Length: 374
Image 1: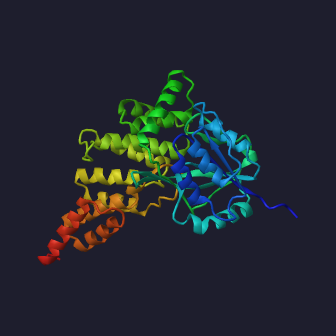
Image 2: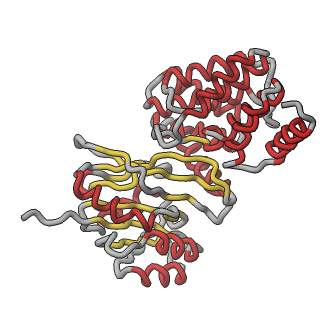
Image 3: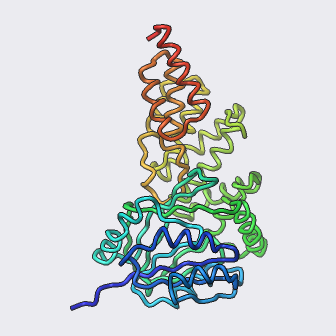
């Protein structure tokens, strides 16, 4: 009889991450889930080591050399199990993790794929801003980690993979997220200036520059990525979306009337790479509304609402998948005097965020009702 396959947990922990490490481990360690736990502190911080040793004897120090892949490969080599589930210390299991984790393990072991993607929610200040699908579980003997930052799993073998949406991991940093972005930019700029940057890292460099609002350079790099078309469709779609967003909106969210036509062009380019994502449809809805073409604005915003944030492995901004288009449709239908439609979309938007603007729209609808305008 074939031996039952095993699942290990790998976690890296850095200086001053004792609280985050304990929080992470409490959220994901479920009875009978992990057959092996390997924790690699990249620090000699005694509090981090104290927490780690409460959960496993397999705690190994890795001297930090500014290379995340080197640290993850070190953890991988210290692991014996068939599959590895990896996490960072500032990650936590979602609310349903404990309930569904064993089913996840059974699926991994019985389905026999090499790589499993699961949703990864990106939090900033307790507000979930985005979601991506990350390669979270992998067959130990088929993969290695590559790149010093924005590290990725690589293989020289033919593999099979699957998506598992039953559970998710949430990234909940306690530090200012800009610290990580600025660190990444320091590393990436050195690589870019040396002329050694790969096509994968060029996208991350452009993305981090964009996050820091260094738009002149980020837009140049995104357009280079789009023109070369040497990345996967998810990356190309997101690159085109970022360019479209830049040409379409001012910092306060109002429309740039002088460049919105360029914004429309890049939104359509984004959709030519993939129509799984809602962001470009919201941009087109806003542009057509600004043009005075209300019917097309409504059409694109309704398409945006129909998109599933769990489809596609690229980074998605969650507010574009119901909240923003529903709020915009509520506003449009309120202006048109179609209050039943406005109420329906307002309720949909309020499922996500009770913003002052949204509540003001609801107040205007209630006022119209009281005045018997419906």
